[in-house]
Image 1 (cartoon, rainbow, N blue to C red):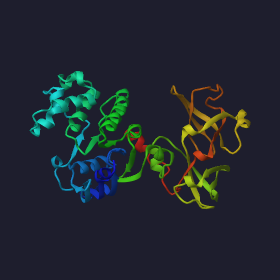
Image 2: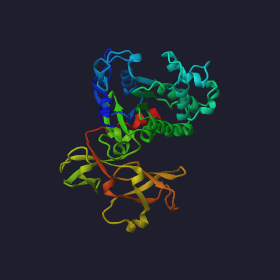
Image 3: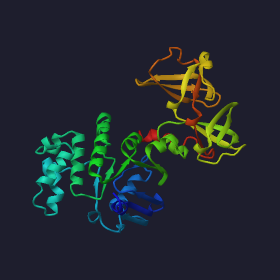
Image 4: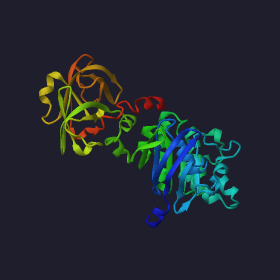
Length: 382
């Protein structure tokens, strides 16, 4: 994949979409490399589906251009773009067999000998034995694979997926996440996937663009977004973050902060803003990075770790882990996820505890940001 890779990129340059006085998508520049699995992630109303529809040609951008490879397609109708879309509804033809549903695009183009291509697609989506069934005889996940096969048989440059797993139950959705990733890896076509489901985006995509209010908040590999959020919205929307308001004591390679008399440390390179002594910083740590010990065991905590004293307000056993809510003077309702390996029977509501974690696992955000940005959005999209 050399020159062809660059020539097959999806490039959005300054595209925006206005509906009267409402701006659904603010001017956006985005390059989606050929052959990648790219996710547009965000809550409903964030502009992700509108962006997808502008790539598909189903919406006309108010400003900017859409290019596929070296070809600008901004004003081309959908059927003239090398793009196919799979919708949440699948839109299969109920009166046609699975075989004929998949063959439909080829037959419409006047191609007579379709058998090999259809058989190849049936094999790709592992539905060969269902070729003669009708859509209503298949499960939701199988119907979804038929919709993907029907789109891919036309050899589009880009496959657009609009909330394709939204109608499936949780277990089937997780199976289909792996299936879609396998199919994308095998065919090597660019997949652009719109979803409000953080786990779905992180499981499948090479690159995720987190959208909020018609803008891209942050773009990167799933692990990068999760480990190094640059905004409070991303920190709260992707998983859960404990965000602590702190004063900067000193700033250098390591940053030292104080929160309600407790000293904490974090690497300077993990701050999305430049910390200055005397200034403010939001200090963040993910719940699963924190260890929890009973206050009587504080002496067992290794030197150099960040430590916060508190009291267990609530605990929930959820199988693989126990989730604790800790009240402390540093921050109300700190969340801690502890794997259920060796549970300390003393860690119950009311117990005095010490939270501790590696300073390297701490990140810093601009204190001027809304500390709760993205929290309600997660609840709405769940």
